[in-house]
Structures are given as structure tokens and as C-alpha cells.
Length: 329
Ligand SMILES: Nc1ncnc2c1ncn2[C@@H]1O[C@H](COP(=O)(O)OP(=O)(O)OP(=O)(O)O)[C@@H](O)[C@H]1O
Ligand code: SF4
Ligand SMILES: [Mg+2]
Picture 1 (cartoon, rainbow, N blue to C red):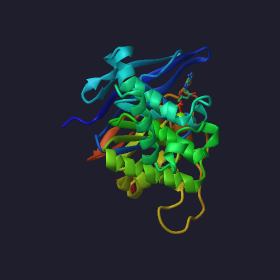
Picture 2: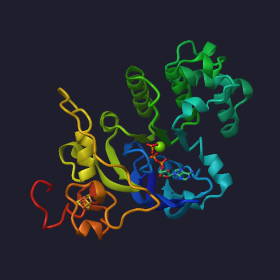
Picture 3: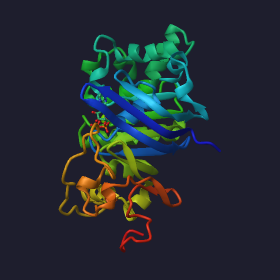
């Protein structure tokens, strides 16, 4: 069976005055119809650009250069803008990064949800309002009938995020993209929002593409994770496999920089150095300048993402190679 989403060789670039930003450089991954896939990486690694490419929302000076984005087997890169407008918000919805501030301050939350319904459904005005109230109830907003008539500034951050999620699921999407959905929220509210998303996912049966900086968030929510570094996927694995057998030096560094799943957190390390300039990438492996294991070959040869065991893919010259020194097999 073909997956809900299959991204093949996606290349997205920005043509800026300073040069060409290689924001996403040849991504391959898939997402099942009922699966939650996590995407983790430092700031600037290409997570949002990947999501915006799937939504076909890359704007000037950006361009999707090549690849295929198969959604239910159909290539979204071949759809007209008109077709995409029907897909966005209906088949594929996205809760955007920093979207808390992007709610329209001049419209009540009920009216904002009703507006999405007007675009995608034939419901009457009254039915749209009723559905908006139902949706606010479904995302756990107390007194939904009253809240529907409130403006965004009258709601707390957590409530606004719930309202945004209500809007995103209003047309029963098959794929929900969440771009750092809880960054602006405190830890307790964050946990509640993930509980909500988990519950909605189970009830509505949709695929979830969850973007975050935080591997521990992914561990509690996703079955599988892809790790991005400087525009490339450097590792992909089942979440359990990733924790017990991380293979890419970058992933290992990320795992050292978060508290363990259980037990006391010991001293946490952060990965020294910075994400390279995506306009002037070093030859060879992008992670080379920050990698303890880098050698001459890493500075010349660009590693490809290869499957080292079923479902576990890694892009590192020292993983899977017969010359490898112990510990990484
Ligand atoms: N409109 C744009 N014009 C030029 N460069 C852009 C544009 N949008 C994104 N980029 C560049 O593309 C690269 C990837 O950006 P992206 O927003 O996908 O990172 P990210 O992984 O989502 O980071 P963060 O965790 O900070 O959200 C960055 O180098 C960024 O500067
Ligand atoms: S290819 Fe070389 S530089 Fe890149 S991650 Fe592997 S060991 Fe490090
Ligand atoms: Mg982002």
C-alpha cells in the first residue's frame, strides 16, 4: 500500500542577494496514513521549508527545484494553484510556526473557524457556526458557545492554540502538519496540547507531521523520526531504535543534549559550533566542521542516506562501512 505522503528528492532553494540558500537539499521520506512522524533539527535546518514545500507555500525568492511530493499517490508539485487551494486546509492542514500571533485580531474565533468551513464545505451559515462551536468543544475549550464569540485577545495562549488546532481539523484533514505547536507555551500547557493532539489523532485517524527542536517531545508522541541537519536528512529511525541505537554523530549529540526518558537528568551537553551557512556549504559532509569523527574523506565525499537496518537510515561515511571502528554497528 502506498503511504499517505511520500517525498522524493525534494530540493527547495532561496535565491537571495547574498547567494543561493540550499534550504532543503534532496529529502526522501514517507508518512503513513495513521502515523505521527517527528522532524527534529536545530534552527535553520530546513524543517519549516520542508513543511511549506509540502503545502506548496514557498514564496519568492524561494523555489521548489525538483522532486516529487506524492500525497495519496498524486504529485502535489503537478497540481495547479487552484487545486492546491482545495487541498490546503481540507486534505492537508498546517498549524504554522508562531501562529499564535497570526490569528486575525478583528474576527471572533468562531468566525475564523466558520470562514474555513465556508471555503471548503457547503454548510449553511448557521450550520457553520454550530460546527465551529462543536470544534471548540472537541479541542477542550470550556463554554465553547460563549468562547466562539470571543476575540483572540480574550483567550489565553493555550486556548488560542486549541482554537488554531480546531481550525486546522475543521475539515477532517488526512494530514496535519504542526510546526513547533507549543514553543510559546509553558510546559504544563504544552503537555495538555500534546494530549489533545494525541486524542484527536486517535479519534480522527490522520497522519501527523510534527516539527520540533525537541527530541523528548517526539519520543512521547511519534512512532518515527527524521533528523535534519543543514537542509539534509541525516538519520531516520523508529523512535525507540533512535534512542537505543543512534548512529549519526549529530543525533548522538542531540541525545546527549536532552534529559533521559526516565530517571534523573545528568549533566547535559550542547553540540559545539553552529549550523553552517547554507549559501556556502563546505564540500563533503555538512556536519564535518562540528564532528569529532571527521577525517580527510569526510571533507571530500558527501555522505548519502543509506539504510543500515530495516527502517533505519543514516548519512555518515563512518556508519555501515566495513572500516568502521567498534560501537556504531
Ligand atoms: N524566505 C526566505 N528567504 C531566504 N531564506 C530563507 C527563507 N525562508 C527560509 N530561508 C532559509 O532556509 C533555511 C531553512 O529555514 P527553515 O525555516 O526551514 O528552518 P527551521 O529548521 O524551520 O528553523 P527553526 O527551528 O528556526 O524554525 C534557513 O537558512 C533560512 O534562513
Ligand atoms: S561523514 Fe564524517 S564528518 Fe560527517 S558525520 Fe560522518 S564522520 Fe562526521
Ligand atoms: Mg521553522
